[in-house]
Each structure stands twice: as C-alpha cells, then as structure tokens.
Image (cartoon, rainbow, N blue to C red; front, side):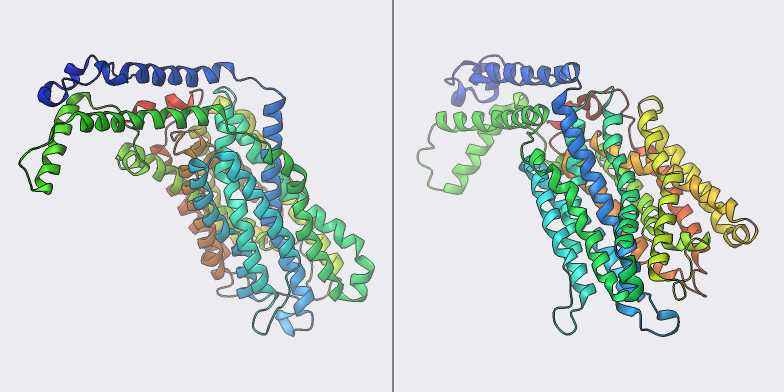
Length: 555
C-alpha cells in the first residue's frame, strides 16, 4: 500500500494561492504519511513474527470450546424435543402419544436459529466498532445465563406454556451463540500466520463436531442415571431434559475467565489506528484552510458565503486530497467487493438449508435406517438411549471425520477447491438419495447409510467448514467481523427456511413421504452454492492485507 508524499503548502494550494499560501509547509502531512506507512509495514511484519505459543494455544482452546459448546446447545434440542413428547404427551391418544406436536417442535428447534441470526448481525457489527474480545466475552455471558434459564423453563400463565417460555430463552441463547461465529473467526484469523490460518480457523470450527457427539452422550448418561425412576413414572423425564440443557453451560463457565482476559489482536488495534489517522488527514487540512481563509467583507448573504468557502476549500484540496478510509457502504458499493460478500452469504445460505434441514431432524434419518425403535411400545429410557446411540453413530461415521479431513487438507487444497468439491459432491449425492430414496431403503438399508454418510462427510469436508473460514479472511480488518456476521446470518436464514418451511412438508402424503422430494430440493441449493463460489477469491497462503488489497480500503 502506498501513501502520497506531499510537498510544500504551495503544491497543495496551487489552485487558490491567495487563500492558502501562508499555511505551514507540508501541513504536517509528511510526518503523518510516514506514520501511516510505518503502520502498514508493521502489519505486514506481524505474519512473519507469528509463532505458536502459549497465548495462541490459550486463544485456540477458548475458541474451540466455544464451538463445542455452541453445537451442544444447538443440537441437544433434538434429544430434548423427543423427551418433551414423553413428559407432556404421554397420555395422548393414537399417533400423537409421546410426540410433541409439529408446531411446538418447530418452534423450539427454530428458536436458536432466529437468535443466532440477530446475534451474528448485531454482535458482528459491534465487534468492529467496540472490539473483538469485549463483545466476545459479552456473548458468552449471555449464553451462560440463558442456558441456565432455559433449563428452568415452565408454564407460567394460561396460554404461556413451557414451549413458549423455552422458545423465548432459546432465542436469547441463540443471540449469544450468534456472536461466536464472526468474533471467533476474526480473532483466530488475525492472530494466525498465512501458513496456518486456514488450519487454525477450521480446527476451531471443527470442535462443533465434538459438540454434536457430546449432546447424545450426555443424553445417554443422564437417562441411565434416572432409568429406574423413568420406567416407574415417565414424568421423571422432566428432570432429564432440564439437566441435558443445563449441563451445556459448563464448558462456557470453564473458559469464561480466559475470555474476559483476552486482548484484541495487534492487527486490529493497528488497523483501527491507521484508518483513524488516514481519516484525520482531510479533517485536519480542512480546519487549517478554514482558519487561514480571509473573511468575505461586504457579503451579508450567509448562504452565499458558505458556498464560496466550500468551493475554495475543495479547489485547494484538488488532486492532493488526502486518502480517506472508505465506509462500509462505500467499500461494498463497488461490485468487485460486493460480489465477494454475496458469494460468501449465498453459499452459506444454500448450505444451511440442507445442513440444518437434516441435522435438526436427525430422528428422521435414524428412523429411516431402523434404529429408532417404537415410540409407543418401547420403554421411554430404552427409546431415548437407542435414538442417542443412532445420533452418535451418524456423526462418527461421516460428520466428525469430514471436519478433520478439512482441517488437515485446507492449506494444501485451498478453501475454494474444497468448497467447490463439497458442493459438487453434495449435489450428486442428494440427487441420488432424492430420486431413489424409497428404492434404496427398500433394497438396502446399508446402501442408504453409506450414501448418507458420504453426504455428511462432504458437508464438513466441504462447504460447512469453508463457508466459516473464508469470510474470516477475504474482508478488510475494519469490516471483517461485520461482513462475517452478515454471511453467517445468511446461513442461519437458510436454517430457518429449512426448519420453518421445507421440513414442514416432510409428512405430506404420509409420514416422511415427502423426504425424497426435500432431498431433491436440497440438491438444487447445493448447485446454487457451487456456482456462487466462483465469486469468492482463493485466500490460501496469502496475508490478510494481500487478500483484501488494502489499497482498495481508501480513496
């Protein structure tokens, strides 16, 4: 990045010498430009001096635990919804027995996604304005408080039942979780070196896989602790679902002190100072021009005088107008930058339609492979344990390995390559699963498991990881948290569309009879994600300043 070198006052004020020829030589611009240039060099040196040390290990641990915790809180609702059916609908008749009605099931599953969307936008923006670590600590405290409150949800007044109360608390929980997405990505991105940045960001995000597995493990353990009392009285499951939710605050509490003592990266601090200094140039010059400008004697028209003053100052600035940091609107007002933001946002939206459509309804898949049992005939403890085991198996087979394959290959293959490959494979797999869904299940359950496992694998060794990594790298430091938050919020919008829209159709024509068509729809969204990926630059091996071309941040 280059900064202009101003000469003397006469050079700058060539157009209107009468009004500016007595300004101090250089208008102090030489010193300021040297300061800006020095900051730029220091930013470039940060990547060369970045080493793995205890401070970095601590930050990676905090960020990794954050995503383990977030995944646990988000996906534990699958188990909780199943248990709530036994607690509140054990005396219902027919097919409604032991099953939460669709409207309440949708409400409690969609709650965190709504909160996440809002948190990603609001806390992401505050991360750029206030500072990453300050907002990061606040988001965890929100999550801890609302997790505990969720566990104590209960019917309060008539018409305000446990599902509505749980919905409200989980929206607020989602708001806290939402902040983790943009802030974790930017914190890790700004601390890591170009050679390891992708691996570190994806490694932190991949802890989400452990959270997915931890939720059913906790479900099995807590259910086993209450097994005899549950078999005697199913209403004792009320303790189980509350414990499953409440235990989700433990990882957050364990890392709260470390979050509170984290500091913003040197890159963020320097970049903020650099932008402020650049913006101060023009303001300083204008003030000096106004101070030296002669009064317009004999002019009583204030409006005419002000207009003349403005013309003189603009003429004096001329081509030597100091570089000024672009606003968010100015930067993304240019198509070359806007298309990158659209690319990251649309790709994440397309992915999450399928990702959350399937993962928030894993019981459908567990039932399809014959692992669910009979909800009306089996003992509640046996049914819950069996479903939790099925969830663990699904995640271990494809989901968790996919995450870590991405972690160890992202610096070799590149982000864009992995994302294109993932979307391409998912398009093919969902087409096969969709158009041959019933045929495959009728002929070979093992074949269905293999195909579904491959889909889980390429979700994570593919766009589920890269849609998180890329927005943490391809935007300028001053907008990174905001832009990542916008991209992530687009993803959560996809999750809401999937859960609140598409998955409501799954029983059209009979129980789970529309699943094949939903998989076909998911294939279309994967194809959309594939094509918009071409709008996104490859960031492998580049410094953050090279990826964003910092010269484009100023005008």
